[in-house]
Length: 178
Image: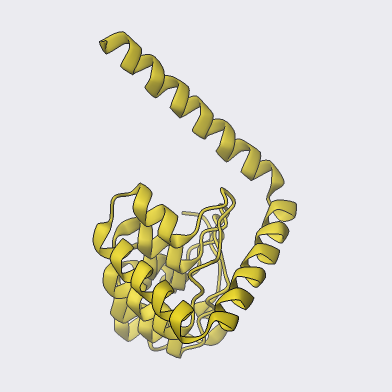
């Protein structure tokens, strides 16, 4: 992949020796798809690598081209340990990607029920512990989503178009088999 460096590769394979050398800049460097080592570690389920990158200054607010945060990517892959690490580090469960989906939404779509349980429990605990903080995080997430729509408007349209095409194809297949 264009733009990947040794820290991107180390995050994918879990090479802790290399990751411990990363500066804040290297932990947050992006490849051609805007993936950082933090995002890659989350996507590949490398929870120890993820913890190292966060200690090295990894930014939890970075997203890929589809607006997926590290929490989205970990939830999509069903990586419970990464999800727990990211929640402990302060990731918001209310952040939305360009499709308007939260990490809980993507975990449900992928049928990652263990992760769904972790995220639902965390959200319920947050609401019970501090309803005001919960409301503030939801507002912040809504504002960030609006910025994502402005920044990646074309991507959102393409994603929705692909979703509609997939739905049409799925419906057609069901009608053929009936």
